[in-house]
Amino acid sequence: MLWGAISQYKLISQQGKISTLSHYKQALVETEKSMQGTRFLQDSLENKIYILKTENEILSENSDPPIGIFFEVQIGSFTDFNLDQYNKNLANIRHEKHNGTSKFLLGRFRSFKKTLVFESDLKRMGINSAFIVGRIDDQIVTYKEALEALERSNN
Image (cartoon, rainbow, N blue to C red):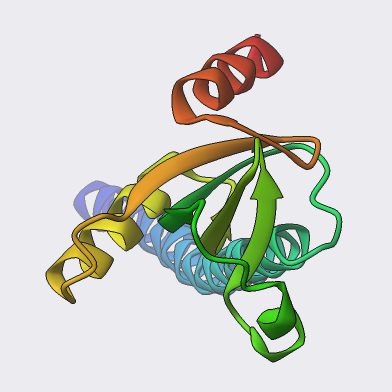
């Protein structure tokens, strides 16, 4: 009889432990499901933030006049030609007079790295005279001056 009571006690104790472990396992499964939903939501929000930042950067790069620090690629500088008559027809090429010369510029980027890639692509297309210039608050400067100003503004 004593043996039966001990066995019964052990059986009830084991069943309690099994029940507790089953409860913990179910809680763990529910927590994992919840975390998957949270991870999905976090990934979705991070993606939306990235898209908004990219759209904001593009809007900023395309604003006129460009206020802030930008980088552009100059594809020509001419003193012997007056091409002012074509300004209205230059949809995506910007023509500017600077220090007595007509300058033709493509692109406008806040990122110097993007500008380097763009300049490289233009050179691969055969525009070998392309080079990067900077722009600070709508004034053309050297790219080094723009990089220094960008460095100061980030500190």
